Amino acid sequence: MAKVDTAREMAVVTKAKELYNYVIIITDKAPKRFRFSLSAELMKLSLSVIEKIYRANEVFIDGVGDRDRRLQLRFDYQIGALTDVKMLGYIAMLAAEHKCILDKQYKLVSQYVSDCQCMLAAWIRSDSKRYGRT
Image (cartoon, rainbow, N blue to C red):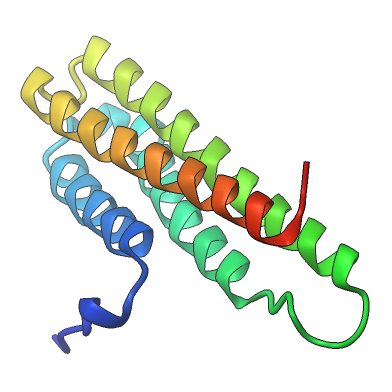
């Protein structure tokens, strides 16, 4: 497997990838009855977070053209990633309650979720200050 240069990646991308990798590990060992419900939802949401972060980061703001539309698009992707992270945290809590994942696994997922939430919120605040969004 090719190694990615994480030094060039945004910290939130790296953290989201760590979350995804951990979700893959814990859902692989989940009971079969949860494979197409809680486990699948955890994997889907963790990938969605990464996708929306990438999409938000690809929206170029300072170019010529409809700046407000691009700002809104970037913001929508950022908020979408934040919402997916929060949903992932909730689904992980349900998974722990139903013994789909272990309590210690839930605690680690919760830490990744918290880290991603904080980083995404900081990114949104930073963009709001930089580009004058209120």
